[in-house]
Image (cartoon, rainbow, N blue to C red; front, side, top):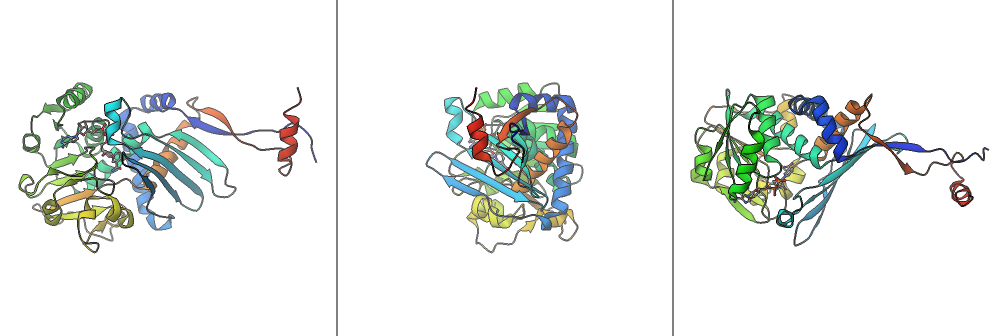
Length: 350
Ligand code: NAD
């Protein structure tokens, strides 16, 4: 038995600062494409994963959620909140961090910020899904809700689906002005609109990405024409939806994990047995995607743990060989694994 001082099993940690450096090191559009590839690859092996609806702790003001999954070799989870009132206090609506661990010994192998990463992975998922469901040649998107997620959503649609024009609308014109400013010079036509109807003119893709803790009706039945693809992002909690039920009834609905989406998604407004298609089956060819030019396809996105797992996997693979992480002394790891107390005692000695 050795009495040598404890050695440390250090855990790579990606801070917000390093995540931003990583995005610029890779380039935002290549990174969105890379994330979409990782997410699509994990959707193809969907059946292999441990899956559960996320564990949500609701309050009057918002929600705090844990999102775990495992592919049998690697385990991952994300901590994420959703507090629509936060922006009024100068805080983010959504913040997050996450972890990957080795299933073989349970030791964490990565801890990462996931506020920026969630915006990237949500956008990459939306665009990966739109690649399968949006009408052919779709190049114009209405972007309703111009908050923190909106530029990411727009750029992913450009990088992955060839979007050429985005039409912005938000109830708060300052949010639209911010998004228009941020998107300037990035190779898209950017049109600021003063009503949701105006934003949808000529759009084949409609993204709703608003934050309000109520059954909102961002899209009413009469606003949605035949043949569009709706990418519904903001309805992701019990009692927090964006689309009128009439829109849902006219749409073919695609979801991530039905057990979670029925609790949190737009379809919480429908009967519990209303038919939905699981996106992983469209991707592996066992279910149909869009079947006609008139069909309204709806991605009822709530965000699922496997997308975070894929995003963390991407980060783990891409920080290798860089200096874009710190090594955290997160795990007590005495040389004699049964001598945790001895390690503590030795730490008292000068
Ligand atoms: P945010 O608070 O930064 O932005 C929300 C924007 O919506 C604000 O600018 C607000 O003015 C606008 N808005 C509110 N009501 C509106 C209305 N009736 N019409 C038009 N605009 C309206 O929030 P965010 O971080 O951009 O997130 C947006 C939503 O996406 C949130 O509801 C969040 O919970 C959800 N979200 C979903 C996923 C997912 O995977 N599905 C992931 C991340 C965030």
